[in-house]
Amino acid sequence: MSVVIVGGNDRMATRYQDICKSYRMKSKVFTQMPADFENKIGSPDLVIVFTGTCSHKMLGGVKKHTEKSGTPVRHLHSSSVSALKNLLSEYHR
Image 1 (cartoon, rainbow, N blue to C red):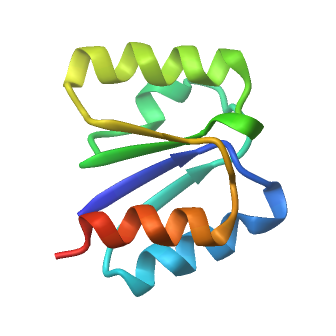
Image 2: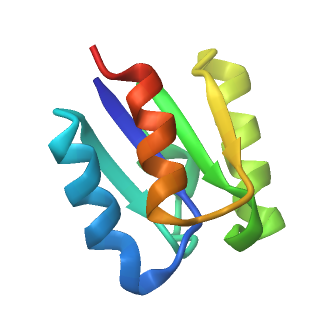
């Protein structure tokens, strides 16, 4: 399973990836909006948006991409490790 995480804290990006790896999930983390953001998302199985630390422009890019692809999006108000672990445990196979 592949996951894209949008938002969160810059210093926590590698921690988010390590947590996803522990659940045997591939991940991409975007804490800042890169150029050509919508195309860099790719085709994940799930998009996780940390709404508290995500810009409106990034959220618009996620919305535009997921409307085209039909990828499920989960919004988390907290960008904490425990919130991410709780969400990933729901999708862990």
